[in-house]
Image 1 (cartoon, helix red, strand yellow):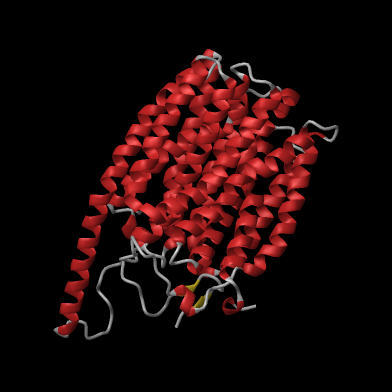
Image 2: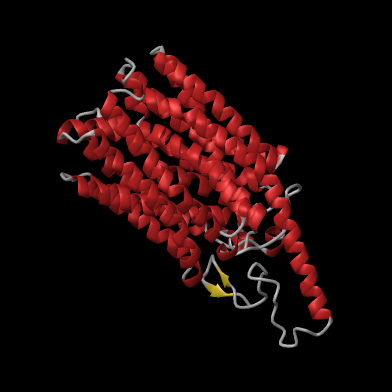
Length: 447
C-alpha cells in the first residue's frame, strides 16, 4: 500500500506502539535483583550491561543514516526487529556476563537504536508542520516501554515462571508487533511532505560532515548529554536506589515503573512545549526544571524518604523524556529533514560516552560507600551546565543562519554571472542535490 493511501495519524499510532514494544531496554533495573541473586554478580558488573546497551543504541541510531541509502527503512526495521527478538530470546539462557553483555547490551541495544531512527525518520516526514508533537508522541512509546513491559516483566520475574520467562515473553511480543508495523513504513505524498512548522522553520539542509563543525550542534549536545547521561544512570538503578533508603520491594518496583511512565509521558509534553513556546525557550526551561528536581532527589535521599524519592523519580523521568523528545525536533529544525537520520544518529553517538560513564560512576560510588548520596550531589552542577549551553544555542543558530544565507546569496550571484557553466551547485556541502539522492523508504534513487 503506497504512502498516499495512508492516514498520517495511523502511521504515528503504529510507530508509537512499536516504540513502546522496543523500549523495553529502559526496564533493565527490573532484571538486576534476580540476576545478581542467582549468579552473584556485582552492581558494577550488571550496570555495564545498561551502559553497553546505551552505547549500542546510539550506534544503531547512526547506522540507519547510511543503511537507508543503500537499502530502505523497511529493511532496516526488519533487521532491528530480528536483533531485538534474538537478543531477548537468548537472554533467557544466560549463565555468563559476556552473554548478557552481548545479547542484551549489543543485540537489544543496537536493534532498538535502529528502530528508533527508522520510526522518527518515517513519522516526521509525515508531520513537517507538527514535528514537536509528532516526535514527542512517537518517542513516548520508547520511554513507556519500562512502565508497560517493565510491569509485565516484573510480574513474570516474581512469579514461579521467573526472569527467563520474562525475556521469552517480551521477545514474542516484539516479533508480533514488528510483523504488523512494517506495513506502515511508507513515504508520504507530496502535499504532506511539503508541510512546514509555523515557528522555528527549517532554513538549511546540512549533512553530518557539516553539522559536526557547527557550534550550535555541540552546544545542543552539551545541553542534552549531561542531563540525559545522569538520567540514564538513575533509570538503570532506580529500583535499587529506592531500596537503599528503606523502600519496600513493591514501592521500589512502582517507583521504577513511574520513572518509566514519566519518561514516556514526558516525550509528548516536551514536543507540545517545543511547538508552543519555541526552540530556545524550551532549551532554557527544561534544565531549570532539572535543577529543581535534582535538589529534591538529594533531600529525599538525605532524609531517607522513599515516597519523596519516588515522586522525584517520576519527575526525573518526565524531564528525561522531554529532553529526549527535543533531539529530533532540534536536528530537523536546525539542520533540515534531508539528512535527519544521519544527524540524529550522530547526536546519539555523542551521547553514548555519557551513557557509559555515569552509570559506571553511580555503581562505583555505591560499591565504595554503600550508598548513592555522592552521586546525587553532582547532579545539580551538570543541570547548571545544561542551562548555560541551552542559553547559548540561540546566538549560535542565528550565526549559522546568517552564514547559510550569505552562502546562498553568493551562489546565486555566481550563477547569474555564468560561473557555473557545468550546472553543478557550489552552495556548499549543505546544499540539497536535485539528483542522485535516495528515497530512504524504498531504497530507490530520486530522479
